[in-house]
Image: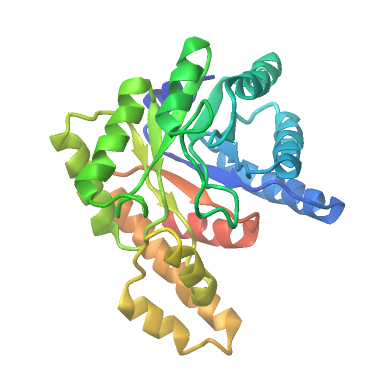
Length: 286
Protein backbone atom coordinates (compact mmCIF):
# COMPACT_ATOMS: atom_id res chain seq x y z
CA UNK A 1 0.00 0.00 0.00
CA UNK A 2 1.16 3.53 -0.70
CA UNK A 3 2.41 5.36 2.39
CA UNK A 4 0.37 8.50 1.68
CA UNK A 5 -2.73 6.27 1.88
CA UNK A 6 -1.50 4.64 5.10
CA UNK A 7 -0.97 8.04 6.71
CA UNK A 8 -4.54 9.00 5.86
CA UNK A 9 -6.01 5.76 7.22
CA UNK A 10 -4.01 5.52 10.44
CA UNK A 11 -4.25 8.56 12.67
CA UNK A 12 -1.30 7.56 14.83
CA UNK A 13 1.65 5.20 14.69
CA UNK A 14 5.41 4.89 14.29
CA UNK A 15 7.73 4.16 11.40
CA UNK A 16 11.28 2.86 11.47
CA UNK A 17 14.40 3.59 9.45
CA UNK A 18 17.14 0.97 9.16
CA UNK A 19 20.54 1.01 7.49
CA UNK A 20 21.93 -1.75 5.26
CA UNK A 21 24.30 -4.22 6.93
CA UNK A 22 27.75 -4.86 5.48
CA UNK A 23 28.45 -8.26 7.06
CA UNK A 24 26.63 -11.47 7.92
CA UNK A 25 26.72 -10.41 11.57
CA UNK A 26 25.09 -7.15 10.54
CA UNK A 27 22.39 -9.03 8.62
CA UNK A 28 21.57 -11.05 11.70
CA UNK A 29 21.43 -7.86 13.77
CA UNK A 30 19.06 -6.25 11.27
CA UNK A 31 16.84 -9.33 11.25
CA UNK A 32 16.72 -9.26 15.05
CA UNK A 33 15.91 -5.54 15.01
CA UNK A 34 13.03 -6.01 12.59
CA UNK A 35 11.69 -8.98 14.58
CA UNK A 36 11.66 -6.98 17.82
CA UNK A 37 10.16 -3.79 16.37
CA UNK A 38 7.56 -5.47 14.16
CA UNK A 39 5.31 -5.92 17.20
CA UNK A 40 4.58 -2.19 17.12
CA UNK A 41 2.75 -2.58 13.78
CA UNK A 42 4.75 0.19 12.09
CA UNK A 43 3.17 2.49 9.54
CA UNK A 44 6.08 1.55 7.27
CA UNK A 45 9.80 0.80 7.39
CA UNK A 46 12.54 2.38 5.30
CA UNK A 47 16.08 1.44 4.30
CA UNK A 48 18.78 4.07 3.88
CA UNK A 49 20.83 4.40 0.73
CA UNK A 50 24.52 5.23 0.46
CA UNK A 51 26.38 6.80 -2.43
CA UNK A 52 28.79 4.52 -4.26
CA UNK A 53 28.28 1.20 -6.02
CA UNK A 54 28.91 -1.24 -3.18
CA UNK A 55 26.56 0.38 -0.70
CA UNK A 56 23.85 0.68 -3.35
CA UNK A 57 23.89 -3.09 -3.75
CA UNK A 58 23.83 -3.51 0.03
CA UNK A 59 20.72 -1.35 0.18
CA UNK A 60 18.96 -3.38 -2.51
CA UNK A 61 19.89 -6.62 -0.73
CA UNK A 62 18.60 -5.26 2.58
CA UNK A 63 15.36 -4.13 0.93
CA UNK A 64 14.85 -7.65 -0.42
CA UNK A 65 15.42 -8.93 3.11
CA UNK A 66 12.70 -6.63 4.46
CA UNK A 67 10.30 -7.79 1.77
CA UNK A 68 10.36 -11.25 3.36
CA UNK A 69 8.24 -9.69 6.11
CA UNK A 70 4.93 -9.74 4.26
CA UNK A 71 3.18 -7.54 6.83
CA UNK A 72 5.64 -4.63 6.42
CA UNK A 73 5.32 -1.76 3.97
CA UNK A 74 8.88 -1.20 2.75
CA UNK A 75 10.29 2.07 1.42
CA UNK A 76 13.81 2.21 -0.02
CA UNK A 77 15.75 5.46 0.08
CA UNK A 78 17.16 6.55 -3.26
CA UNK A 79 19.75 9.27 -3.84
CA UNK A 80 20.28 10.83 -7.25
CA UNK A 81 23.21 13.25 -7.13
CA UNK A 82 25.61 12.69 -10.03
CA UNK A 83 23.39 9.95 -11.49
CA UNK A 84 22.14 9.52 -15.02
CA UNK A 85 18.48 8.91 -15.79
CA UNK A 86 19.16 5.48 -17.30
CA UNK A 87 20.72 4.18 -14.07
CA UNK A 88 17.98 5.65 -11.88
CA UNK A 89 15.24 4.13 -14.01
CA UNK A 90 16.96 0.75 -13.91
CA UNK A 91 16.81 0.83 -10.11
CA UNK A 92 13.20 1.99 -10.13
CA UNK A 93 12.17 -0.67 -12.65
CA UNK A 94 13.69 -3.27 -10.36
CA UNK A 95 11.85 -1.97 -7.30
CA UNK A 96 8.59 -1.82 -9.22
CA UNK A 97 9.04 -5.43 -10.32
CA UNK A 98 9.47 -6.38 -6.65
CA UNK A 99 6.12 -4.79 -5.83
CA UNK A 100 7.54 -1.77 -4.02
CA UNK A 101 5.19 1.21 -4.11
CA UNK A 102 7.11 3.78 -2.04
CA UNK A 103 10.40 5.60 -2.53
CA UNK A 104 12.19 8.17 -0.35
CA UNK A 105 13.62 10.64 -2.88
CA UNK A 106 16.87 12.29 -1.77
CA UNK A 107 19.53 14.33 -3.48
CA UNK A 108 22.34 12.76 -1.49
CA UNK A 109 25.78 14.06 -0.67
CA UNK A 110 28.63 14.63 -3.13
CA UNK A 111 31.42 12.02 -3.13
CA UNK A 112 33.79 12.36 -0.19
CA UNK A 113 36.77 14.57 -0.89
CA UNK A 114 35.27 16.33 -3.91
CA UNK A 115 34.76 19.89 -2.72
CA UNK A 116 34.46 21.07 -6.32
CA UNK A 117 31.75 18.55 -7.24
CA UNK A 118 29.60 19.78 -10.15
CA UNK A 119 25.98 19.36 -9.08
CA UNK A 120 24.62 19.94 -12.59
CA UNK A 121 26.98 17.73 -14.59
CA UNK A 122 24.56 14.79 -14.65
CA UNK A 123 20.81 14.35 -15.14
CA UNK A 124 19.93 14.97 -11.49
CA UNK A 125 21.01 17.99 -9.50
CA UNK A 126 18.30 18.13 -6.84
CA UNK A 127 15.81 15.85 -5.12
CA UNK A 128 13.01 17.62 -7.01
CA UNK A 129 14.47 16.22 -10.25
CA UNK A 130 14.19 12.69 -8.87
CA UNK A 131 10.65 13.33 -7.64
CA UNK A 132 9.63 14.27 -11.19
CA UNK A 133 11.06 11.02 -12.56
CA UNK A 134 9.24 9.02 -9.88
CA UNK A 135 5.91 10.65 -10.64
CA UNK A 136 6.27 9.75 -14.32
CA UNK A 137 5.88 6.12 -13.30
CA UNK A 138 2.42 6.77 -11.88
CA UNK A 139 3.21 3.98 -9.43
CA UNK A 140 5.24 5.24 -6.47
CA UNK A 141 4.23 7.21 -3.41
CA UNK A 142 7.10 9.65 -2.94
CA UNK A 143 8.59 10.83 0.34
CA UNK A 144 11.07 13.69 0.68
CA UNK A 145 13.26 15.11 3.43
CA UNK A 146 12.61 18.46 5.11
CA UNK A 147 14.83 20.36 7.50
CA UNK A 148 13.54 21.96 10.73
CA UNK A 149 16.66 24.13 11.01
CA UNK A 150 17.23 24.46 7.28
CA UNK A 151 19.49 22.38 5.05
CA UNK A 152 23.12 23.01 5.88
CA UNK A 153 23.76 24.27 2.33
CA UNK A 154 20.84 26.72 2.38
CA UNK A 155 21.78 30.34 2.93
CA UNK A 156 18.55 31.04 4.83
CA UNK A 157 15.33 29.41 6.00
CA UNK A 158 13.55 31.22 3.17
CA UNK A 159 15.87 29.70 0.58
CA UNK A 160 15.46 26.30 2.20
CA UNK A 161 11.70 26.63 1.88
CA UNK A 162 12.07 27.42 -1.83
CA UNK A 163 13.72 24.05 -2.36
CA UNK A 164 11.10 22.35 -0.21
CA UNK A 165 8.35 23.85 -2.35
CA UNK A 166 10.07 22.62 -5.52
CA UNK A 167 9.98 19.06 -4.19
CA UNK A 168 6.33 19.36 -3.25
CA UNK A 169 5.36 20.97 -6.55
CA UNK A 170 7.19 18.14 -8.35
CA UNK A 171 4.81 15.68 -6.71
CA UNK A 172 6.04 14.69 -3.23
CA UNK A 173 3.32 12.96 -1.20
CA UNK A 174 4.74 13.21 2.32
CA UNK A 175 7.86 14.32 4.15
CA UNK A 176 10.10 13.17 6.98
CA UNK A 177 12.22 15.66 8.89
CA UNK A 178 15.90 15.53 9.55
CA UNK A 179 16.65 14.82 13.21
CA UNK A 180 16.01 17.58 15.72
CA UNK A 181 16.19 17.75 19.51
CA UNK A 182 14.24 20.93 20.21
CA UNK A 183 10.60 20.57 19.18
CA UNK A 184 10.24 24.30 18.57
CA UNK A 185 12.19 23.85 15.33
CA UNK A 186 9.69 21.25 14.11
CA UNK A 187 6.69 23.42 14.83
CA UNK A 188 8.40 26.43 13.25
CA UNK A 189 8.97 24.34 10.13
CA UNK A 190 5.26 23.52 9.96
CA UNK A 191 4.44 27.22 10.26
CA UNK A 192 6.85 28.13 7.45
CA UNK A 193 5.33 25.46 5.24
CA UNK A 194 1.83 26.71 5.99
CA UNK A 195 2.81 30.28 5.10
CA UNK A 196 4.18 29.00 1.80
CA UNK A 197 0.98 27.08 1.02
CA UNK A 198 2.76 23.73 1.36
CA UNK A 199 0.38 21.05 2.54
CA UNK A 200 1.43 17.42 3.02
CA UNK A 201 2.01 15.09 5.99
CA UNK A 202 5.29 15.82 7.78
CA UNK A 203 6.55 13.10 10.10
CA UNK A 204 9.00 14.25 12.78
CA UNK A 205 12.25 12.27 12.50
CA UNK A 206 13.56 11.26 15.91
CA UNK A 207 17.10 10.12 16.61
CA UNK A 208 17.43 8.78 20.17
CA UNK A 209 19.83 10.98 22.09
CA UNK A 210 21.85 8.29 23.88
CA UNK A 211 25.50 9.09 23.11
CA UNK A 212 26.01 12.83 23.18
CA UNK A 213 29.46 12.77 21.57
CA UNK A 214 28.31 10.72 18.57
CA UNK A 215 25.21 12.86 18.16
CA UNK A 216 27.38 15.98 18.26
CA UNK A 217 29.27 14.58 15.28
CA UNK A 218 26.01 14.03 13.39
CA UNK A 219 24.71 17.45 14.35
CA UNK A 220 27.87 19.22 13.22
CA UNK A 221 27.47 18.08 9.63
CA UNK A 222 23.76 18.72 9.24
CA UNK A 223 22.96 21.91 11.16
CA UNK A 224 21.13 20.45 14.14
CA UNK A 225 21.04 22.07 17.56
CA UNK A 226 21.39 20.00 20.72
CA UNK A 227 19.93 21.92 23.70
CA UNK A 228 22.65 22.98 26.12
CA UNK A 229 20.89 21.67 29.22
CA UNK A 230 20.70 18.06 28.02
CA UNK A 231 24.22 18.27 26.57
CA UNK A 232 25.64 19.32 29.93
CA UNK A 233 23.60 16.73 31.80
CA UNK A 234 24.76 13.89 29.58
CA UNK A 235 28.38 15.02 29.51
CA UNK A 236 28.51 14.58 33.27
CA UNK A 237 28.28 10.84 32.57
CA UNK A 238 30.68 10.57 29.64
CA UNK A 239 32.53 7.86 31.60
CA UNK A 240 29.31 6.03 32.44
CA UNK A 241 27.72 5.12 29.08
CA UNK A 242 24.85 3.20 30.66
CA UNK A 243 23.74 6.19 32.71
CA UNK A 244 24.23 8.54 29.75
CA UNK A 245 22.02 6.29 27.64
CA UNK A 246 19.35 6.20 30.36
CA UNK A 247 19.30 10.01 30.56
CA UNK A 248 19.10 10.28 26.78
CA UNK A 249 16.25 7.79 26.48
CA UNK A 250 14.30 9.71 29.12
CA UNK A 251 14.90 12.94 27.19
CA UNK A 252 13.73 11.37 23.93
CA UNK A 253 10.59 10.00 25.60
CA UNK A 254 9.74 13.48 26.86
CA UNK A 255 10.42 14.93 23.41
CA UNK A 256 8.05 12.42 21.79
CA UNK A 257 5.35 12.96 24.40
CA UNK A 258 5.50 16.70 23.74
CA UNK A 259 5.18 16.12 19.99
CA UNK A 260 2.17 13.86 20.52
CA UNK A 261 0.57 16.35 22.93
CA UNK A 262 0.90 19.04 20.27
CA UNK A 263 -0.58 17.03 17.43
CA UNK A 264 2.25 14.95 15.93
CA UNK A 265 0.79 11.48 16.35
CA UNK A 266 2.85 9.79 13.60
CA UNK A 267 6.55 9.62 14.47
CA UNK A 268 9.51 8.32 12.47
CA UNK A 269 12.46 6.77 14.33
CA UNK A 270 16.03 6.55 13.06
CA UNK A 271 16.77 3.20 14.70
CA UNK A 272 20.50 2.83 13.94
CA UNK A 273 19.55 -0.87 14.01
CA UNK A 274 19.41 -0.72 17.82
CA UNK A 275 16.05 -2.21 18.82
CA UNK A 276 16.44 -2.12 22.60
CA UNK A 277 16.71 1.67 22.66
CA UNK A 278 13.74 2.14 20.34
CA UNK A 279 11.68 -0.37 22.34
CA UNK A 280 12.38 1.52 25.58
CA UNK A 281 11.30 4.79 23.99
CA UNK A 282 8.08 3.48 22.41
CA UNK A 283 7.10 1.67 25.61
CA UNK A 284 7.69 4.94 27.42
CA UNK A 285 5.29 6.94 25.22
CA UNK A 286 2.44 4.45 25.05
